[in-house]
Image (cartoon, rainbow, N blue to C red; front, side, top):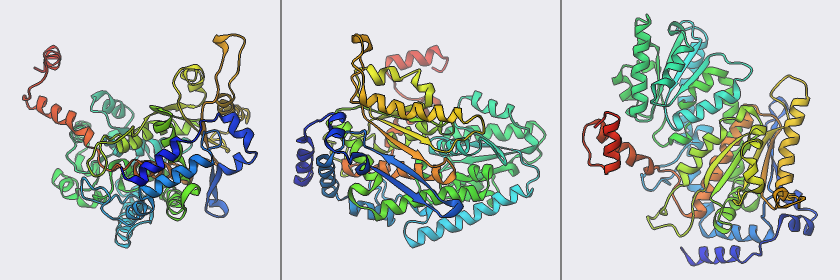
Length: 509
């Protein structure tokens, strides 16, 4: 830790801890100072999201301290390196070029992304036009980022219409694949195999079973029903996929950041290319804001200020996300991987032990369901949990407007109640209050807004990593258990007594 970084942390930790009520009482302009809209498009494509951090404990002194920390950590240079396609993933010696898929990056990478998108668009439109015969279903097989992103986006954008029904399968548990089979007619089903290396054991095992299912059910050329989404196109061809149905993406696009590449194929197939392009456009609007805006006015950086404050100063071990919109039911799951796989590290980018906490545990739920499940702890428990609320002004349904009105009033009331608290009639009915939350309020939850929300969280995650001095783009923590699983499968390995007993009990010893 450099002297400048240490000085910034000392400045932050010296700020008195005032309550939210005190912060609001001392500054009548607090809401205006800590709320900001991000907008994009014109006319029918116009949209925006309001971000409100006024119910967090950020104040002028804390923000100034975190701005000093970001400067000491070299945030402007790190941001430029990310967006310029430099090898910012230092442990693996490669760039992290997901923004190039949205048009922000090195010229060569942006051109490559445009060419690969054009290739994907041709295939998507050909399928819609019947080039592969009638296609009513797609079974999308992947794991991690190859499944979480597509599953979330398809679920969010196809509630009222799906050009092709998409079934995402990630679990190696055969029940997951059988459930997809039961919903599909083999004669009208395509299989998408999403694997960066085309060697991931869970994905390739599921893919082999899917091909067998096609063949067992009268499809004469099962391989002819497969689309491969991969950074290793030669392996896909060797596996049996015709090169015309191989959609590559660059090695520099990481799995949990890959929705924007050919991994987004099931999204485009389900909702059409124009909607997929709108999602890219919404994400690009955030990219441009992130690139062009400095300090506290940078929405992603400001969110990271709050994250760092609660994790490092207040000792919060978790962060909760509650979407008051059924279309975002899978967003907490998606953010779990994005944030915890990116920033759940114990060493800095230069391989030194970290000096404090890194990523908190991300969790959450949906709307009023969560109020009747976990909000007891959030209001009256002994854990301090910063919360993000996400909602849409426009409803996603066509029912009586009372549905959406009640949904939004519950969302806003929860944030107000967490902050205000209530003395209560007795200790059991006492709400301590002073519990922080932020709110993201979309004009509408369309494809562009979804893209903007995802990109915002990507850059928020990166900003947190920069202020921690860690590399958010590797994920070596997922490998040890997988290596041991391979040892067991191969009949080898030397394990502890408990594991050996479990293997024997399951008939695997």
